[in-house]
Amino acid sequence: MAQLNVILLGPPGAGKGTQAERIRDEFGLPHVSTGDMLREAVAKGTSLGLEAKGYMDAGDLVPDEVVIGIVVERLDEPDCKNGFLLDGFPRSLVQAQELDKALAASGRKIELALAMSVDDEELVQRLTGRRLCRECARPYHTVFKQPAAEDICDECGGELYQRSDDTEETVRNRLRVYRSETEPLIEYYQARGVLARIDGVGHPDEIYKRIADRLIETRDREE
Ligand code: AP5
Image 1 (tube, helix red, strand yellow):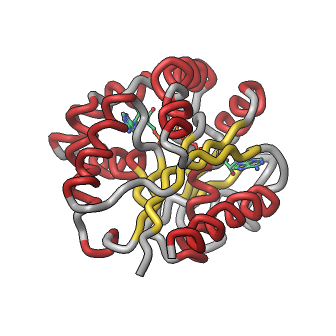
Image 2 (tube, helix red, strand yellow):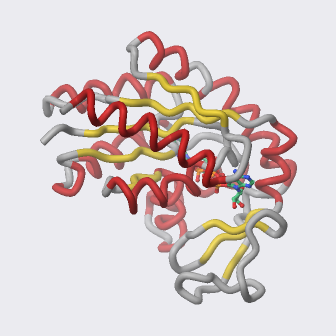
Image 3 (cartoon, helix red, strand yellow):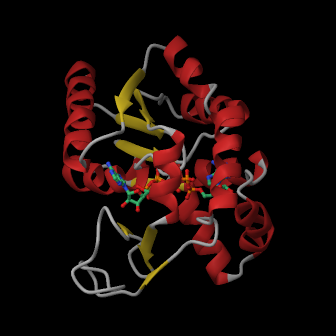
C-alpha cells in the first residue's frame, strides 16, 4: 500500500489543528502534533514538560534536539507505518533535515508539504479568540466557531480553556519566530518538489476541500 507522509506547514493560527482533525478522520492518517505532545508533557509535569514550558510560554521554539527525539520515536510507532500527518513539525531547517534522515533510514520520505497562508492580523484575531477543549483538544473560537453551550465542548462535553500562549504579545512573538525560523521551509520543500500552497482564508470547509484535492492527487500518484 502506498504511503502518505504529509506535513502541515503554516503560521500559528493558520488552521493546522482544525484541518488536521478532519484529515485524520477522512484519510485515516494519525495526527502527530508536537504542540499537543509538548502541552501534554507540561500538564503531566514530566522532565520534557518542565524543559519545554518556558519556551512555549514565551512563544519561542523548544530546542531542536528535544523535539526531534520525540517525533522520531513517534513516527516509528506501528500506526505511522502507512502514513502520518505532521502538524507543527518541522519548524526549523535542522528539524527538516533530521526528519528526512530519520525517514530515509526506514525507506520513507515526505510525499506532500501543505503550506497554509493567512495574513498576520487575521492570525492574531483567530488566536486571541481561540478556546480549546481540555479533554479532546478540539479548537473553538469566541466568534468564528462557538460551541452550542458556553465553554463546553460539543463533541465530548469537556471544559474549554484559553492557551497561555494565546495572548496578543506572545502571539506576535510566535509570528516573528515563524517568519524567521519556519517560513524558509517552504523553499526547502519546494526544492524537493513536494510543496503545495494552500490559501488558508475562507470557511474551514472550503479550505478542507483545497487540501483534500491535493491529498487525493498525491495518493493517486503514489499508488
Ligand atoms: P503549536 O501547538 O504547534 O502551535 P502553532 O503552530 O503556534 O499553531 P496553533 O496550534 O496555535 O494554530 P493552528 O494553525 O493549529 O490553528 P487552529 O486550527 O487551532 O506550538 C505551540 C508551541 O509549542 C510553539 O510556540 C513552540 O514553543 C512549541 N513547539 C511546537 N512544535 C515545536 C517544534 N517542532 N519545535 C520547537 N518548538 C515547538 O486555529 C486557530 C483558531 O482559528 C481556532 O480558534 C480556530 O477555530 C480558528 N480557525 C481555524 N480555521 C479558521 C478559518 N478558516 N476561519 C476562521 N477561523 C478559523
